Image (tube, rainbow, N blue to C red; front, side, top):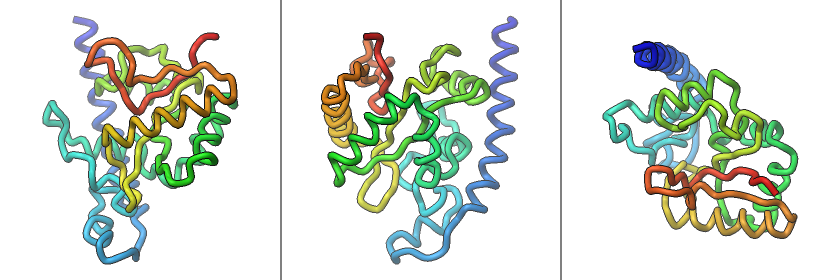
Length: 199
């Protein structure tokens, strides 16, 4: 019973935070862009510049997934460098090497180091299974692929290319990495997730 009450409280917290995210997304909306991007960038539901235009509006539970993404990371392009700076420096070095070695590989940090509030949100939404995530220490990063227009899209081939580039960069630097795309069980797979592995 206590677990159900806690889940309901976390869900309520998530809804309250979504309200904040909706306003932040609308305020961050840039003007301009190409005519093709104007169709989506003018819609605050898709985030700044239409960055979430290719994310399905609802998730498998019928929840407003666009609102969840905006609350989670209102401006992934604008927040990329700040997210990179708070990662474990070893992991940040790997991500920087991937960018330097693969200039045509487009991605953004969707989630890096998380405080307790964000980890509780991730658990309440089913995006994480544990409060003790390596994200809490900056030892994990979620890299979201971008299409040529700079919109987040969770394409398996793009995620596989990012994973291959990250594994190569990590190997070149002698950094042990675990990829969520190889976690056991289909429900445990998270193709965007990379974490430092124990040596």
